[in-house]
Length: 265
Image (cartoon, rainbow, N blue to C red):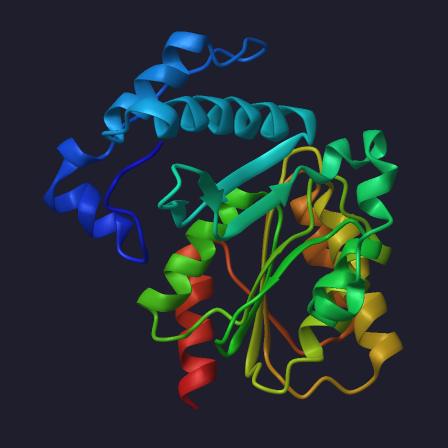
């Protein structure tokens, strides 16, 4: 995707003047064809030496995207000099973590001191964690369910403090690690655990909640748990027999309402 109207407000350009947003489609496993690179240069309104340099630049850009196994490669802005050269003034490159095994030279460049410490720690336990600015800690399995959970929290008057997807292989150890990471945020006023047991077993998650509670000690913030699916009944029994002060709900809306009351108290 490219445009002559780049900058910070590209979304506004797409909304107000969609004709100024150009797209080229490349089939997976294929390559950017020569005619496509020339079409891009033409749509930029270039000619002569600048046209040739843009064709070369775009081709190299696509080859770099594929060769690095990138998830995203963005150049903004792109600059044409007075002597017809094409220069990338700024670049944003996201790599596919699953492909890093093929790029040890890129792994060697990583500087974890430049990353959020909680996200680094979460990565050690294969937890998908993103720090946010809210007051409700979230622990969910599955990205789609996590997004829906965050929406319900906002509708109930809370603000998500994080995105935390424990994945389909969550166990007691990963749940406890997730607990510890969430509780490092002093702004968290409640924790919502929303697990749908498909592959993951709800009783394993429940055991993780119990283990975390016992290991961490006194947890001051309210904990609301919704466990549905595989071994949900066993999970509920485990939590009830543990004597923990954990509120449970069947529906996501009920759980979100409990969270709303907790953060407004």
